[in-house]
Length: 500
Image (cartoon, rainbow, N blue to C red; front, side, top):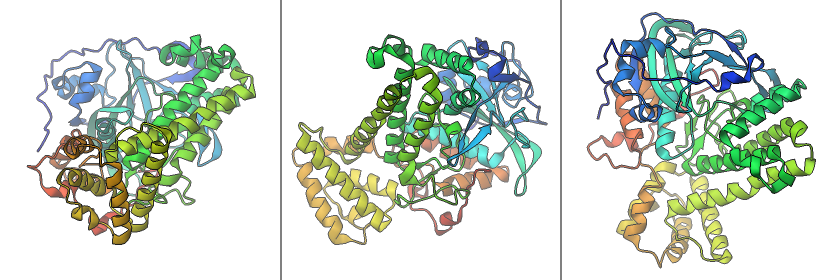
């Protein structure tokens, strides 16, 4: 199943109209600059889904006009390229000023979508870097952005991926690539931390007002917190972040570098670097080779998100004023995360909605017991859920039992599970479970196979993998089982770091 690029029209004219809302904030928030051109750019992959969201024809993305624009070689009429400034905590330590080091915002379209290039050259915030991205990491970001969207996880999008033979120096010489990213906004927690740390309260207020008016207008009419719109903003961001983390934990996604400058104010997954989807279920799994202390281990992600929200609360305190308001706004995270997580796990298990508190507590106990079993046996996470979904329909749980070394523990849990599901129709439940438990996720070794082929000039593996990840819940029976099989032994030797 290949998804080749559409044929392009070299004479095509850009269909995009720009309005550039972020630019109205003024020069304190960004530096205007031009992307740095790349030699001989070429289209590698496009997302038809993202193109539809942006409102452009799929075929236009393969035109010479689009390839030049989305490689940083040309600026289309109405674009206003810039790099934004922000600060942040990295690995729990205040890092001071950061900013878009290799990202350039081209502008915002009339439809309210910001378009950003990642890897388009140096900016004033590149911090001695070259501002470039390599093909390897760009393939991972392109695939994962669209895979997460297909899974229903809030995320920035990847419109297209272009490449160039230009040499880029990392651990070895690699070739350049540019990912075109889309989002309603790329504003991060770190944007607020930047102005708070500098005592620039007016700029902090200007930024908060912009975010509220554009993305959280309901905060203006709140009756909570004595009508304090800034406390309401903190609460709304806390709740979106809680829902995002619940989705990450349910699907088995490890971000790898949850610094405050990598946290979206809209509760989106942003900045795909050393991420990984779990193979074996292990709460202590560390996907980032640079994370020597394990700060961003899979099981710790919910607590790290709360810590980051606390940093955001500190940044907003000059506007919120009352400590009690900030504390109450943050408390919403502690309510929303567990409720969202249990709801997602209940869907994965095909459990009926509880009618009373006792049923809720019973479901939580069932979920916790299962996660302990999975962790003790390092059971393959995606395969377990897919097999369980099929077993629910057939009544044959032996393929699931085969995944466990602790057969007695599994048998005991299964009895409890069957008691929980005795009043539900297994066929209908299985259909719902198959839409909650993907067959295909972007495992590290699959991404690595696409990367190795692409480095050799073969993009067909990337296109095939993209097509599968865009419909992750389908069986795709015509495809080799390899794409949904256990990882090979060499998969555990893959090391992904912040520089990847």
